[in-house]
Length: 478
Image (cartoon, rainbow, N blue to C red; front, side, top):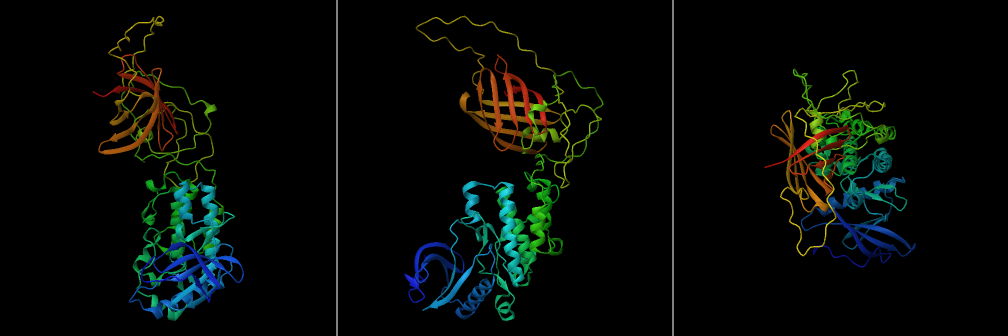
């Protein structure tokens, strides 16, 4: 691992036989080991000191970490069994947790389901409460410092930069930059030596955001109520995260127990708000809408739309580019508010484009059965079997563009929504068969079901989103 640290085969006068390395940090190495006296698997953390380091002060910190951890007996904190020095090496003998870290799980499986994330972080908070009660501030809570055991439970580990309630130790740590930026609250960036346990509350909230979304939690305290960073999270989770990651420490949950209780009370069955951009209300049109095909109210058999995401038509709906039906229907709540959504079923509605209607497709006669011929029939000039290319829709200043490529059975491309200078892009995939174009945006619930006209230049069909469906016309771009 490093030329400056020679790792022996055993430590503690041969009691601990070192096996495979488990990890390496800025302060120490961690190895899997066998306690030959108790015939038990352990994890051994060996202090890492480069040349020129103040060896005596680091050893005091390392010993203080071991003593502090040894005092904590909690099912969600990694247990310390022994500490010692072998020659020039200082080490801590800890409980071996074989399931990897929470960060590893995020890499392997992607964002965790809310129920799993809330359960694991709730366990982490219970362990963190015991740490705080012992007078310790961890200062580096993050997914890579949370281990998962065989029972699929969370264990807090790595107290290497913890702030311990020890006056002498505090003096040695003042002025040292510590922590992981994505999980650090503002006050820890300014003075790591002066933070309280509320810094750990912030870091745990940031870690919860990371495992729920898979996105970076850096500067989460800057995310306002209407921020896109809350996309795909239920209002209840948003409320909890915004309080835990408040910029001011006093605005956060006062204890880890309070944070855990708030998580337990979250209704994970809440509907996720759709990914739309909030816009001011538009004035009612002064001209009656031109005749256009409309659709009936959404079939109740489709059930409740529960998935959300940004897509071309989710933005189009939010911008008011589509006409709503009965004015007496109650308006839907703002998608970015943190208030609880109504429990009633969505109000049926229908949409229409204000452009001229597309002429009905004229029926074509069934072609006669082909007879064997030595030459293949020439493809008609207006053949619509190839829909690769660029297609456009527009209304009230919003331009929707579909850029498709690939064979009809494996189309792929991008859906673009443009309003003034703002563009929203989503990957899109689908197929084209029997004059029918079926597409779905990769990260959202937006679907396109459009029939292409015989001339191959126009199409008409429906676009489905979490808010309902709309009748649309499609034109091939020149």
